[in-house]
Image 1 (cartoon, helix red, strand yellow):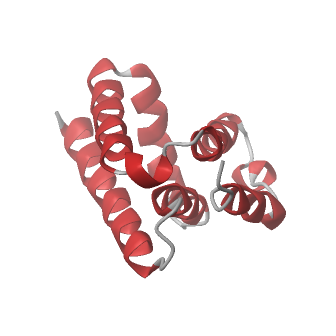
Image 2 (cartoon, rainbow, N blue to C red):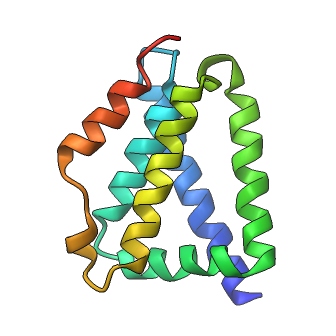
Length: 130
């Protein structure tokens, strides 16, 4: 229960980061996906990355955490479907999830961090209309 409580707190923090980023983004098209990419990258640069990494790894293996993450993400995707439902938006979100997995599996967190060009490329993807 302690792990679930901490996971929920971190998920709420991530969600509030998304809300702030979306509020500050004047362009509706792709706003959620840009916020998702930016918030994910910002978390990778935090000093408490180890805490986040441990919980994110748990979310891959613990059924209750996996379900919580899946439900949260599905609700967010549905909520933002009008602006972020293109395959390009989905690819940008999947790519940043893959970056997280790469960092989780790396023995050196700094070694697994992608270049800033990767981030800007993903953000550019979210601005392209189908």
